[in-house]
Image 1: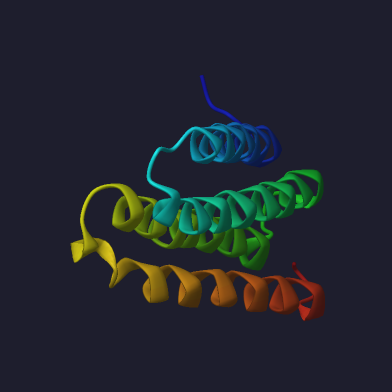
Image 2: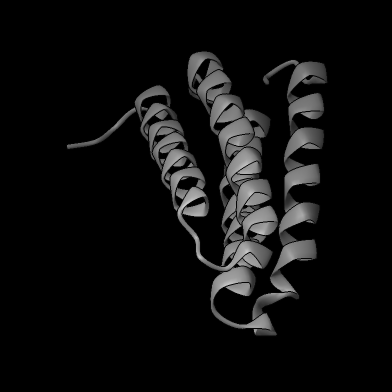
Length: 122
């Protein structure tokens, strides 16, 4: 069964939102207080971008290449930025390099939204 762009981005937004709430709840129960700020930051960024993905779901239509690119960049950026922060805080500092890569992808996602707004095709 094929899934259209709107339903796909809606599902991704829902997963991101659920992950953000799970991350925030986990941070509240951490025994390592030093890890909490990074986990809280990851949860806030993930929730913010879940809302952005919800907007993409509302606007998605066939041929909206910049919009779909923005969504993909948001997903990749959240995985690297939020995942990197979480893994660094909880597991190992070897994941620190993921964080700036993820931040860059998130910035590029927002710039792709600008391009979608300025493009005739979206």
